[in-house]
Length: 292
Image 1: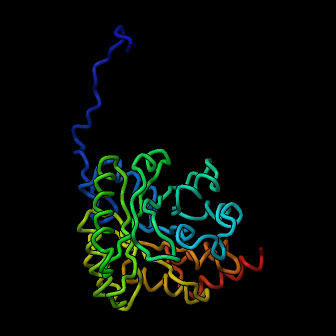
Image 2: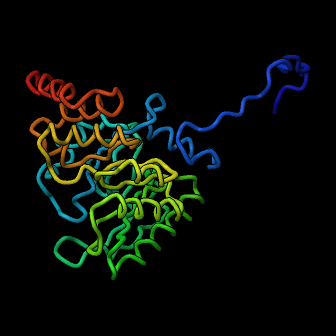
Image 3: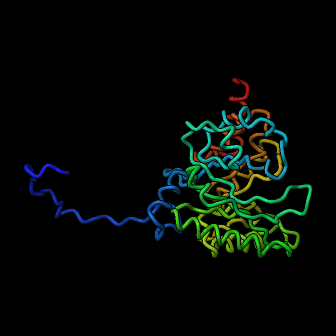
């Protein structure tokens, strides 16, 4: 109990200084719970308002694909250079040191591989996200896929319910359905569906007219890196997305399949956080690669 013998009357009430009421630095978050906003502030850089996420969840569909044969050797050394790590519970538990202090975006759906009809996924137990101290939870939406669209949107809605319960933001990941066109109209629709169902972050693909996708989505949008591109093209992809208003990138193959993943991480960060042009970032990449 507090010592009751020395209770001093309060004097410094700051009567000439009104209480501040400032908005949160990320769009769509002003009305969110404190815990959810705190986790978002860990994922996104508060100076730039953006994030560089390192995705290595590909194995839950593809197995030990190139660059992900050994997560402990290929991904763990890159962790300190990312703003957030996106992976599955198995790989994070076995291959990412518990001393890692970077926020985790936990892949929370599972169910099929590239060998079968994909996207028939279910959610893992909600307690897993709490056990793993997740800063966010990621789930896929298969918009435009007749047989799985409804179930994947239901997964998102259920995960948002869980996220609201524990103050954990949800990232909706827009998969490429069969009945779609890779254009701003489709990705704008898919992204908006994520936000309409309560996602705090949307991960989607960059396309021409991407500024429309960002404008119609009331929460931060990060781009997927997609297939492996030459380094300059990948950096141009990042730059173009940022110029269109993207809140960052969630890159995987364009980092861990690069000739020098560490250098590519630094180059991507220079584009996202420092506003470097693609050629400037490529110079940085080459400098670090040669030094390594």
